[in-house]
Length: 110
Image 1 (cartoon, rainbow, N blue to C red):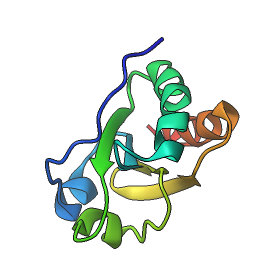
Image 2: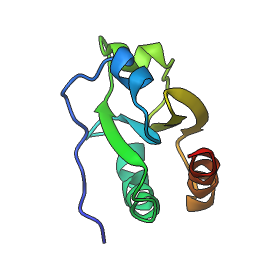
Image 3: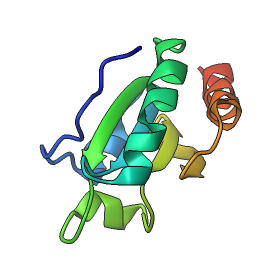
């Protein structure tokens, strides 16, 4: 079983995200969110099969600009990007298949 990763409090800016040139999954949530914790293992397992995709867990909440810039409303929200462009959005992902499909779409573009 993959090791649990904590959501980082280190701010990342929208400009940094937009400039990122590799496939990227932004995973918005909090360490205390039950929905986030429930999805954590599935997300980690799927992403472990996609080593070319960078996974950044971003702690979200009031005053967190990056989440607001992506209009995040519920946790977890996974935003799949390629070269700074949003390709898919998964809100409270229920299955590995939907994340696999989103990742396949950005890997095909790489």
